[in-house]
Length: 284
Image 1 (tube, rainbow, N blue to C red):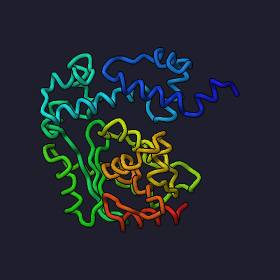
Image 2: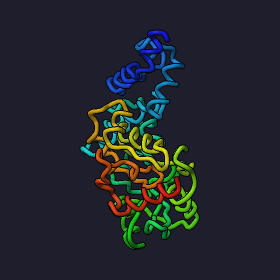
Image 3: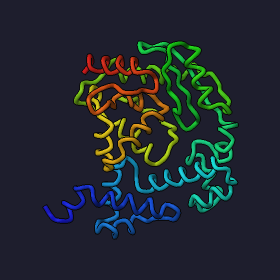
Image 4: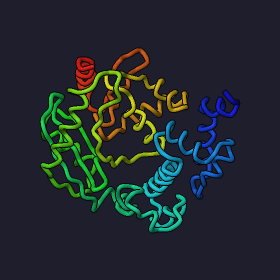
């Protein structure tokens, strides 16, 4: 095995690429530049980065810019200045719906004007409610009652326009199916192949991607997940990202436990987390 291959496979190359993108997220970073940085071809950098990070270098840079844009808007910056300071080359790029799932102006106003379709249904794990924008599933919550489930959506998106859509019941069924029936423990999580509208920092998006890769019937500790992400010191940040997950079951944060195997916390209740893991264990 060549020294170059060993270097790449150790993960050092991709960590160097990641750090470079983060340091220069406010300007275009071509694949050729990243290739020169680690002495690999642009194609190899693209392939290896996506394998490790779950997104392409360009997608990762865009996520960093969105996080910067989101932070500036929350701090009260004008939309125009926030867009340009985040590294978007024009206001039209900043307003592209692919960046935030809603326009920067709507985000600054707490999602005012955003259209979210929703549907709720009972399941073996309590009431489930899903919410979806035109870009994909943005909310899946678990609750003890129908009223609590529907209230959770309103609390999360207080300024959005909510519209009941019974056709989204298919998303509820698909999400519950990932836990209550299906694959054995050697297969990847059978998360429904639905478009997701996940909104978070670049690191949170990496964590949520890693959660979806945990095989059904298995668990990871927060520290193990941090190591898999190449940042063993990020255990608390991983736990925080799990706590902020807005899409239960599909992004299976219930599969992350304490170092001792304890269930620790869960946004939708520790007892419900126990039921989910028991259901997956029975079927694995």
